[in-house]
Image: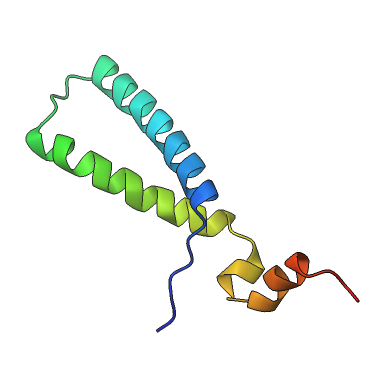
Length: 81
């Protein structure tokens, strides 16, 4: 099994967006319904946000990063002769 791809700059931006959208959705849901927050909601919301962020991060990654194409990344660093 290969390594799971991770690009920090994309993941952290995605996490920030997911947290903002989730906070807005939770606020709207709590405001317009009679739902009460449970301890399970508080415990699993951060876990779910991180997992969802990673999945969206994978969706946003370029295809060469997902396929593990190391040559395309290293060729950008080395000048052509």
